[in-house]
Length: 446
Image (cartoon, rainbow, N blue to C red; front, side):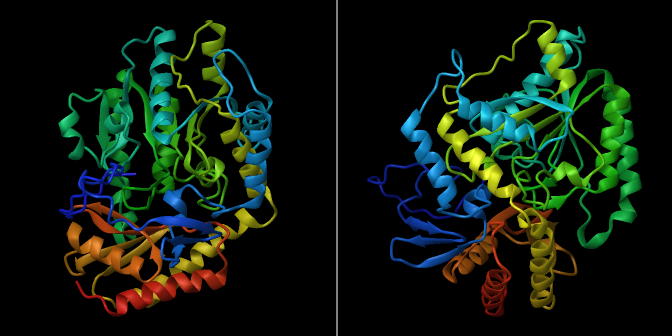
């Protein structure tokens, strides 16, 4: 996720937690969430909220799933931790086989880790390692998008376009990332600009190909404002990667595991990546788990040269996390669930567009499947974006009305909030989400 800082000046020296990406002075005023059930969460007073962002985009099957609970409990009775440096574990192996069963045969092996940031970090290492083995020591650099978000570890942060302002205090960052302008066309202006953007992409590859190890893209940008990449743009990237011998990495941390209506968002494009980065929905948010799914040409080169991938953390492949992952994949395979995601997403987008179309602060609804962004503006004539304080006021008002949403704030580019409801949400519950937003905006003028 990206950095969103509150203007709160609250201080409580007795509160022990520094919350991620929040002011150090914040925390004790946060609502305490104490229970979850399906698409709902409950705070310390018993108030119920619709979890419109599935935890933090990582619980596609909602809260308190009994089958995942049972899988975790069963693994606890066997063994809770295995040292993957020296041993294997049948649950971990079964999870990796389950994951490979839902990707094309192009992919052969998996590297396990704990977070999406770590998965991107590993992908960067693998791309550089691959060309180093081939003797192409100059191929160390990457193309990324200027509205991208890839994580907060050092290389992942360095690859993230939207956090460049916040990351200056940590410089020097990891070098070698070229930020390409994201093909973002508000209100359907793609035809007017796509040809120019494709030409610029061609030119960048032509100039930098001898130095490029990889391209890293989110097929639908998440923290950058829920921006689906145009099909023509992704296909051209794949063609250029093949032409110039550059590895293609899909960061599917947010889009993976059914979020867009397919197991993985690359399935919507005629473009297979060489490496897939996964986390979040991988085991329904039960325990830290991430994975890199690696194609055969990379695996074979590293294997044939008796090389290793220099990455390790103590909890890699934790069997409890993997047990939850096996159960999650099994549930996502159940007939009809993934097939319903696009229809539910279309319904939600259609209903939101209808109720908000006349509101002075509404710009557009966009997204894919149940990954939806509502773009808000201060002025519809100029597309002037909201201030951070105005945006947080909107999100706080929805929270007070019982809906959890997630803000995105890219000053002078796009501001609004995103919805990532659990995939199990029903049509009746979708109408409840719409009703809360309608009620909130009926009293809202910014």
